[in-house]
Image (cartoon, rainbow, N blue to C red):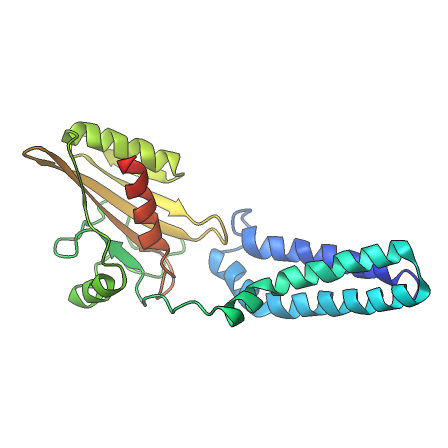
Length: 241
């Protein structure tokens, strides 16, 4: 087929745009994060396979015809298709362990922080902000045994100001802050799919410093795929620097 390489390349470029919309459509306000995630899970592999096959067919055809320009276009198309299939290949070669079936992570499982401003009416929320109790705590303790409060020699006021600055640097949207009580609530979003997780942080004075507790809760999904624990770790690492 004449111009098969260019046709395959156009298909690949359109496919790349579709994949970008799956990943970032929610950020653009096109749909809810779950919609983009659902499209990604159901459509990425078939789309990648179609692009890869079209690119390979065009590549073979162009090689037979010895059309240099078409060969390059077809090769690029095939590479785009292969890139789309890379997540499937990676999980097949190196399956990742299943994440814990929880979406609420806290540094204090005995007396978890409560949300006072954010509530179950927050946009797109399907999960409650009420803590799940001992069952959730037991799963967290087994899956994320390193999650614990931060203790620091900083005064409570200094620790609170540092925590607030770090949260803003991490891109969290501060919903409410109370400097007098040294606590704030915020919403953090994932860079891909734009899922929203809600965070509450409080600083408690100690005799020789202070203690910082956090709790991070996903708005949707039974499992957070480890995102909330990773968020708390990232905050703690930056705080300790």
